[in-house]
Image (cartoon, rainbow, N blue to C red; front, side, top):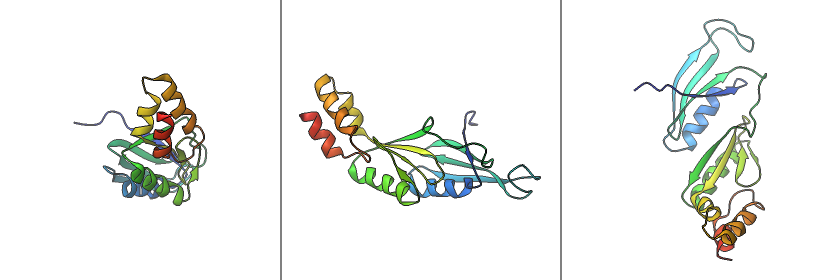
Length: 159
């Protein structure tokens, strides 16, 4: 079946590097076709990489080397659900350790400016706890964190 909806992500010349990094970092991710510009364009020349098809954890994406006109913001992010602290730490460290930046509440930004939420399942379960007091304690604990600490979330949930 042909995919009819693809996330298009704008890069300032780094689409292929970003796609390669994502494919090496996240499971069920890959770099597909690379397309070169058939002519000069505002931020490049004929023959430069114009677009890169890739998937991030099964989500189809297109990296467009559109130049510096548009920047990524937290208004768009990938939320990656993790199973345990080891996976949370591995993905967080991969993004931040490759020129990225830490942010609050499990968010970080990669070196191309794209935002990621590295979100353990345990966090979602805790803040959706049917006991409102337990959910609030877990939520309040999360609000003090950068990378999510599952043990601290679970301790807060228990009270």
